Length: 106
Image 1: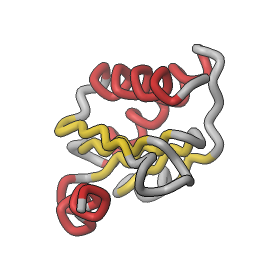
Image 2: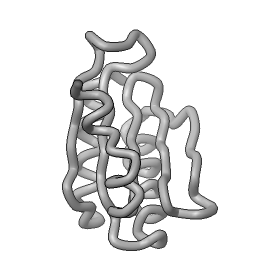
Image 3: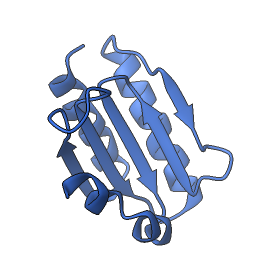
């Protein structure tokens, strides 16, 4: 599955479970490790897990695969790795602290 399809399915899955402040960053010119980073906020650790589960379900349903899913235990920051696309689902205070947008946009 190509990167653009992974991004669309992931963003749709995030919106379906009401993630907030969804940002899609194209980083292909900055790194060869992946093409896109998606960052989204969740209102609770329960929601971070639900969002990650929904992405996993939608990607697998479309014939894609998840390489790794990390952080579900704490739910503070859940990472979904699909190879060319990485999704970070974070609680607002965690997102503010790590400020990944600034790291990848500068």
